[in-house]
Length: 390
Image (cartoon, helix red, strand yellow):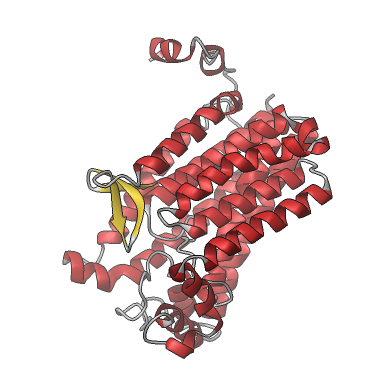
């Protein structure tokens, strides 16, 4: 295997990165692992509960989605172990190539016969019986590339408007391709994550405010330019006005919240998952959780995500304290990504944000999400290791 890495990386200088590693014991952040494993276990339990009825109807077995989710988690664990052995310098060098690969895949997913259309959106590329959701890969590629860019151009980002605007032009292309799928939710997460990383890198406040206004205006213009997006963005304000059409999904979610009360109706006793609430095991898993486990379950999940983001940001600060800027920005970006996506998903389920089609990280059913989220966690573990073993 070593000669393969040599052949692939000799021109880019990756050989030393991948081969010459210290043989000291790997240092794990056990609190991060505990939080992530708790979310995965909680999510696996809720996927089983939310999908039993629909799984039995479609596949004549109540555990089709549960078993596949379990396989995804197993694959993610194996893949994550491998990723923890890859030095951060490798990700720093490969960042631009990952983003180019993401752009290529975003184009390919729009090609009929290659892209797989599900619920009206071309977001997946079929790989046998499985499908890769390209936006999940692009989120990770974006954070890795942006971390390297901020290290290479930190002074320019802080002092020059050109250093600030150049990456936004590139990610404007990413946003256009995502919106063609359409995937407004992933676009929102990526753009806000980039802005947050730039702000943490020291971009001047007036530049940041100007770009927030420009990006916000562009997203608003894109939203109102399409009747489909405009309906999805405004329905949440008055879902009961058209509860059997555009507001159906949200009203069913709100009913689930209302039935849950403080302690919930009990695990497995949800009524809304019985073909009333669409996407009960994916985008609206939190609504089923709220019905079955009530406010207590909601607070437990929100608490876990709060601890997760706080832990990731603390890893970023540790990396910053030893002046490893790439590791710091990478941790900050992953923390923003997870925090934003969880906040948006929960907000959508609760009816305080427009429907975005975003999964709840580590919990919702979906192989692409589980695999890419766990790869990101493995990178965080590598950051923690290199902070204490530079």
